Length: 512
Image 1 (cartoon, rainbow, N blue to C red):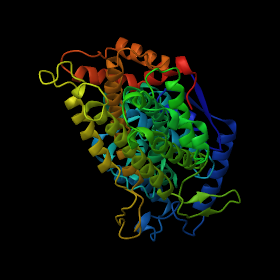
Image 2 (cartoon, one colour):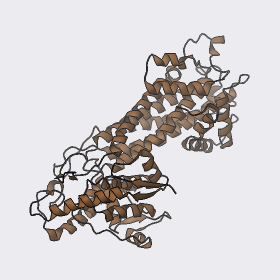
Image 3 (tube, rainbow, N blue to C red):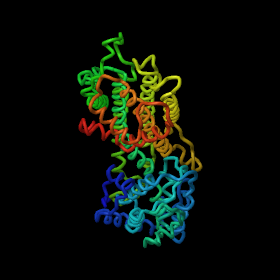
Image 4 (cartoon, rainbow, N blue to C red):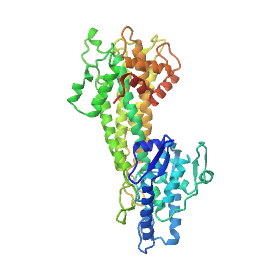
């Protein structure tokens, strides 16, 4: 099994994916253990002094003015975890919780939190045992950290609350720890606060969304190319020299992908032989510009994610010169903004894909294809309602594109009077990515059927490979009406699992 070693300088996106989705094991580096011990020594020294230090010998948030005596400090750390584990709503997905815990461990191992090495090791042990705390949908405002989600994770470390075992069964966390030989932690000064105070949930969801969107944007280039081909559109608009004079990197990459898919097609450009059409519709002609803008948005989001993955987000933090200082680095604005940017790009990519699908089904705009791609139009409805489903998904995506980060709601008696709502931005982006996959699956379904209905001319070799692969995956071709939901579900899986991209790349080589 793959092992991820956590040091003091952060982790990579591939590390997050390996732990969250791949079940990779985690080890702490010797450097991290030494940094943990050194920072803990600083916290212990401050805890012994009579002067109050925030997070070490005081209350939290609006209650930070109270100095806490030594005999109550362990109780204070337990209490903050218990009281902050106040989430509600549906359970969050296992991969999100694993990313959340792993990224909190990443910050703990930086040596800037003051957490003892044994607490960090327990975090790693819980992840390695396949124990997943029960975390709920609601409870984070994306500022002062993803407080409720992280608190539910910390509660598991204490042997309290509920968690899911490696068998998928939810049980008391204490039982699961005992079965795996893991001792619950007894939290000391600052440790409870350090386990809660980070933007780890929203960052984990950003990393996973970027991985999914990398595949989906390639898929969108493929479905756009198939639609262009089915509509007898021209591939001249994809010429590299045209995109070089508007040198957005994403646009150039999308155009190159579409051109690669269409190489060798006998279908492109034939509208000029028998019709006065001079240009293709925007949804066809401008596909690289729209998809490319989304790709460039992803590049910016990836830069933000890389910076966050190298960050130590906590308050207060232990600095290398021995100071323990309060700060505002827990504010989720940098992550929240790009999560919202991505939701906007996803909605627009889905919107242009739906417009191409609608064009394929309209006999007045499809250049010779039967109405709704039906076998016997009137008796058969063809893909009419598949497009309705796609349109409903696009409408939902437009609602999900409304920024969460434009909102703020005061909390903690106005001490925390401006928050990022980054967790909410991340949650809606996950739904958006899911729905984009379905939208592209419908375009694939329609475009592949439309290409097959173009008799007498051969599609591109890459297109033929896609049609062969998708038919083998259980997505049926043209014919009389049938129960359509299973076909659409199979197309969804085909796209979601990356098989659409794989089928093309087997012919074209790696897409950009």
